[in-house]
Image 1: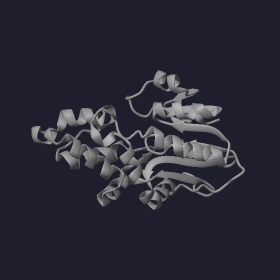
Image 2 (image 1 turned 30 degrees about the vertical axis):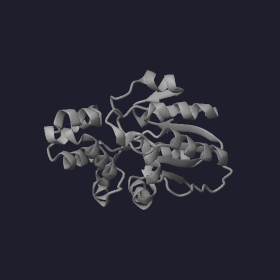
Image 3 (image 1 turned 120 degrees about the vertical axis):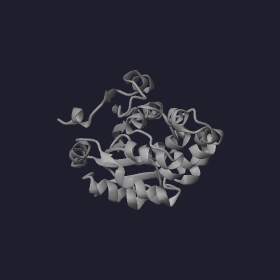
Image 4 (image 1 turned 90 degrees about the vertical axis):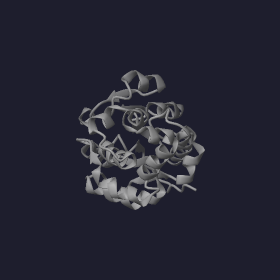
Length: 233
């Protein structure tokens, strides 16, 4: 059960991975662990996990691709404890902390992430270490069991967990508690959720080449950016 404290301030909802933090080096190291080979960081940045498996996996590994793909996400989500060993590889996008610090002076920051509840302490420590505001903010996370409701573990057709229904549930609870002024996210499909609530500013963050401006705009984004400096006033 998700419990959000009731607040009177206006909120800004921000995703974490690939929005505030560049996680591709972490994913690269995890993929190297899974496939027992060297996967280039450049490929990790420009290719989907399905494409990585196709390029780097051996014949034997491709035969059990679904199993390995699931383990990849179990480690990424820190369902397996070894996942915590890779969190230090995440790096903040330039100016992201500066923008959020400015917003936090007037509005409440709500971090909405697909990370699971068991990573709460590590995630807060990580955000704090990179200069993101923590005081007075909220961190809304998934339960690992919620991923079982998605289809991400059943094949390699997506770039990772999407879980639209779960994301929609979490976001609806946020807007019930406080008006939302802005939302910033790197996944285009989530904007089909956000646009249902008449959010004044819905900002798509392009951090990987998997998406284009129009993907975000078609789903309801009001603006698309490629770097946080675009949001500095």
